[in-house]
Length: 126
Image 1 (cartoon, rainbow, N blue to C red):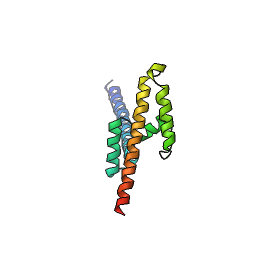
Image 2 (cartoon, one colour):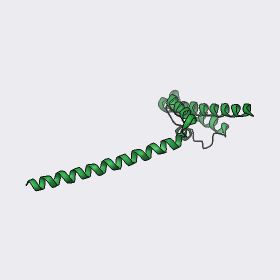
Image 3 (cartoon, rainbow, N blue to C red):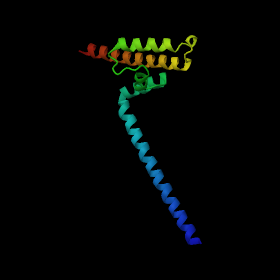
Image 4 (cartoon, rainbow, N blue to C red):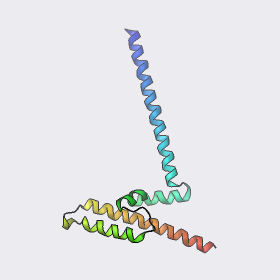
């Protein structure tokens, strides 16, 4: 009886150990991916600060407004105005979705401002 109990304990410990190792590997991979996306350094810090301020990443904002490239400012504005108008509470829309659309536009505006500031500083250096 004690032999079987010892085997159960050993097998359970092995299973928990494998699960812990797998979870640790996944966490390390996710951390490395987040660092790669953030860019690291001062640029990564600015992006993280913008993400925290608006509550969403640039990728999420681009998905919400259905834009691939920020250079097409007219498409960003057109999609924002359409989605904002469609989701008005008076028209039976969702205030939550409308606020997400607003935050997405705010996040993209912040990113565009950072790009413009970087371009200006680079221009002033030369």
